[in-house]
Length: 103
Image (tube, rainbow, N blue to C red; front, side, top):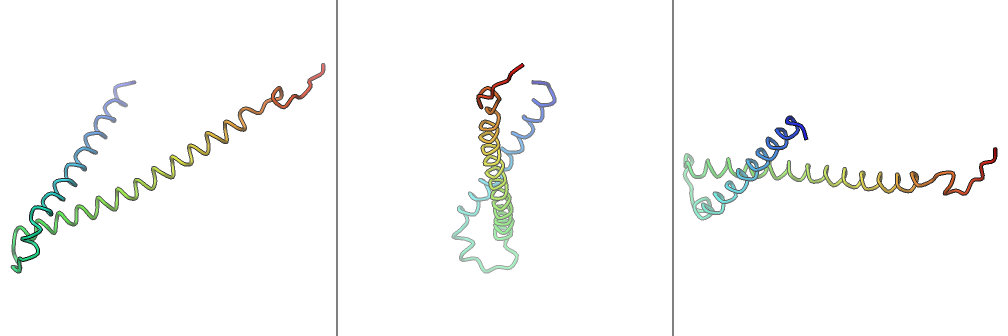
Protein backbone atom coordinates (compact mmCIF):
# COMPACT_ATOMS: atom_id res chain seq x y z
CA UNK A 1 0.00 0.00 0.00
CA UNK A 2 1.43 3.36 -0.95
CA UNK A 3 1.99 6.23 1.47
CA UNK A 4 -0.88 8.44 0.25
CA UNK A 5 -3.45 5.68 0.74
CA UNK A 6 -2.08 4.88 4.19
CA UNK A 7 -2.14 8.55 5.18
CA UNK A 8 -5.73 8.94 3.94
CA UNK A 9 -6.85 5.94 5.98
CA UNK A 10 -5.21 7.33 9.12
CA UNK A 11 -6.88 10.71 8.56
CA UNK A 12 -10.27 9.05 7.99
CA UNK A 13 -9.86 6.97 11.14
CA UNK A 14 -8.92 10.09 13.12
CA UNK A 15 -11.97 11.95 11.81
CA UNK A 16 -14.26 9.04 12.68
CA UNK A 17 -12.83 8.87 16.21
CA UNK A 18 -13.26 12.65 16.62
CA UNK A 19 -16.91 12.50 15.52
CA UNK A 20 -17.56 9.57 17.87
CA UNK A 21 -15.81 11.45 20.71
CA UNK A 22 -17.93 14.58 20.18
CA UNK A 23 -21.15 12.58 19.95
CA UNK A 24 -20.49 10.51 23.06
CA UNK A 25 -19.45 13.46 25.20
CA UNK A 26 -22.42 15.51 24.02
CA UNK A 27 -24.71 12.68 25.06
CA UNK A 28 -22.85 12.37 28.37
CA UNK A 29 -23.25 16.10 29.04
CA UNK A 30 -26.97 15.96 28.28
CA UNK A 31 -27.47 12.93 30.52
CA UNK A 32 -25.38 14.41 33.32
CA UNK A 33 -27.25 17.74 33.35
CA UNK A 34 -30.76 16.45 32.55
CA UNK A 35 -32.04 17.33 36.02
CA UNK A 36 -30.71 20.90 35.75
CA UNK A 37 -32.18 21.33 32.27
CA UNK A 38 -35.61 20.16 33.45
CA UNK A 39 -35.76 22.58 36.40
CA UNK A 40 -33.87 25.64 35.15
CA UNK A 41 -35.91 28.68 34.19
CA UNK A 42 -33.15 31.26 33.61
CA UNK A 43 -32.83 32.80 30.17
CA UNK A 44 -29.03 33.18 30.17
CA UNK A 45 -27.98 29.96 31.89
CA UNK A 46 -24.60 28.74 30.51
CA UNK A 47 -25.42 25.10 31.22
CA UNK A 48 -28.68 25.34 29.29
CA UNK A 49 -26.93 27.04 26.36
CA UNK A 50 -24.30 24.29 26.30
CA UNK A 51 -27.06 21.68 26.48
CA UNK A 52 -28.75 23.28 23.46
CA UNK A 53 -25.49 23.12 21.53
CA UNK A 54 -24.98 19.48 22.52
CA UNK A 55 -28.53 18.61 21.48
CA UNK A 56 -27.95 20.29 18.13
CA UNK A 57 -24.72 18.34 17.60
CA UNK A 58 -26.41 15.05 18.47
CA UNK A 59 -29.29 15.77 16.08
CA UNK A 60 -26.99 16.76 13.23
CA UNK A 61 -24.60 13.86 13.66
CA UNK A 62 -27.45 11.43 14.22
CA UNK A 63 -29.13 12.45 10.96
CA UNK A 64 -25.83 12.30 9.10
CA UNK A 65 -25.09 8.85 10.50
CA UNK A 66 -28.50 7.61 9.40
CA UNK A 67 -27.91 8.89 5.86
CA UNK A 68 -24.43 7.38 5.74
CA UNK A 69 -25.73 4.04 7.05
CA UNK A 70 -28.45 4.01 4.38
CA UNK A 71 -25.95 4.79 1.63
CA UNK A 72 -23.55 2.10 2.86
CA UNK A 73 -26.38 -0.45 2.98
CA UNK A 74 -27.48 0.41 -0.56
CA UNK A 75 -23.94 0.22 -1.92
CA UNK A 76 -23.40 -3.10 -0.12
CA UNK A 77 -26.59 -4.61 -1.60
CA UNK A 78 -25.68 -3.36 -5.07
CA UNK A 79 -22.21 -4.87 -4.79
CA UNK A 80 -23.64 -8.21 -3.61
CA UNK A 81 -26.16 -8.20 -6.46
CA UNK A 82 -23.43 -7.31 -8.98
CA UNK A 83 -21.22 -10.10 -7.64
CA UNK A 84 -23.93 -12.72 -8.06
CA UNK A 85 -24.90 -11.43 -11.51
CA UNK A 86 -21.25 -11.52 -12.57
CA UNK A 87 -20.84 -14.97 -11.06
CA UNK A 88 -23.88 -16.29 -12.92
CA UNK A 89 -23.09 -14.60 -16.24
CA UNK A 90 -19.32 -14.91 -15.91
CA UNK A 91 -19.54 -18.69 -15.60
CA UNK A 92 -21.38 -18.92 -18.93
CA UNK A 93 -18.83 -19.95 -21.57
CA UNK A 94 -19.12 -21.97 -24.73
CA UNK A 95 -17.78 -25.01 -22.92
CA UNK A 96 -20.26 -24.70 -20.03
CA UNK A 97 -23.05 -24.34 -22.60
CA UNK A 98 -21.72 -27.46 -24.34
CA UNK A 99 -21.43 -25.74 -27.71
CA UNK A 100 -19.69 -27.87 -30.28
CA UNK A 101 -17.03 -25.95 -32.18
CA UNK A 102 -16.13 -27.62 -35.49
CA UNK A 103 -13.23 -26.66 -37.70
